[in-house]
Length: 83
Image: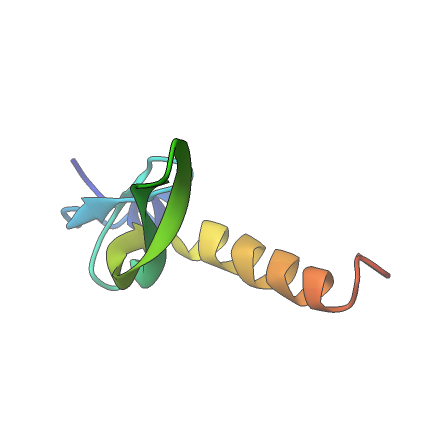
């Protein structure tokens, strides 16, 4: 698999992973590492609950999806105004 962003620039570079959101191949230059919280299923009596784990999973995003995530996060901190 080759990097999608590089291919758009007519560069042939192998991918080191795939984007968590859109699934395109990304090279080391275009990959944006991130962390995703992990939850553990626990039981409190008879009711199952999701408990955050102490570690986060490592994920990769392409530069386009990373930018969308940043924009959405900024919009959510503003309460959804002017997005």
